[in-house]
Image (cartoon, rainbow, N blue to C red; front, side, top):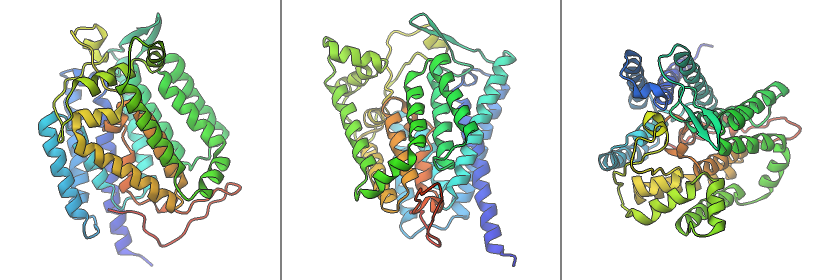
Length: 401
């Protein structure tokens, strides 16, 4: 029998997904050399971004059924982010919040598919623009090794998007890959490590592949624990990254070697933690990295960039937002563990590890974990891997907002 309410919900869901594709496509192009041009293409991309945001707002305002306290939560959050924007002049967090707001009651699998499609389309379009000389393929060097950026502002900008695609795809496939999917991801790892020379993202992708291969054993361990071991691991490494950054000493061979392994991330985070005051609602701190035309030609007087997402949120966006982000991460580690959503729990662990070495958590182009938190995760509830058969409980709603 034809169900009109389900059909209407289906249509409203796809309003959001179209908006998500347009928005993420545009956000990804914003970290390419196209963003530094004054071309008609760049103007069109910006128009597409706001069309996407408009569709997401349309779905959020008129076609989403919220729980009682949710509207108050979202109004207060967006108001807080707007105040932080006034202080920081950075609107990325507002966009991430809007993408997450629109995800309420939308199927996580559809969101993952749409996010992957948008990022792949953006990469293909960027390669097309490079091929036709619309934008430049900036070439960087490290230890006499050539590092092409393929139209992105920096090689690690592309590698962060590739990491986002890999983790999203693995979650979509529920940590089960066939031989061809293994092969494609291994090719991406090779490209990341040996062409982009983006070692940290490459190593993270290797960790994901190993986790897929050992998934049954990992889940057997996680499922037997009453508390989330992933939460403990994440908090340990987040705390460790703060301590190592704060107590960094360039005269120490230990710290110097560690800083070299992490490509100067410790020394830059040390500057952030020791030379800038802590604020409640954020502050405008100008960061200058090595990306783009200005970074390539080192046309600047002072290099300073905070790659650690957690430290960047704390120092630039303020203590209040840092505590909110930490609260959300802890809450969903606990929630997903209690509901046996081990796939999402593992994904959050990888995202937290990645956030300690890159600013992906505050990038509208690749930050998908907050979107997943607000989505309908029914397809991942009570998921147990037993000879690769799936069991899920029915008629339960997992979206909390």
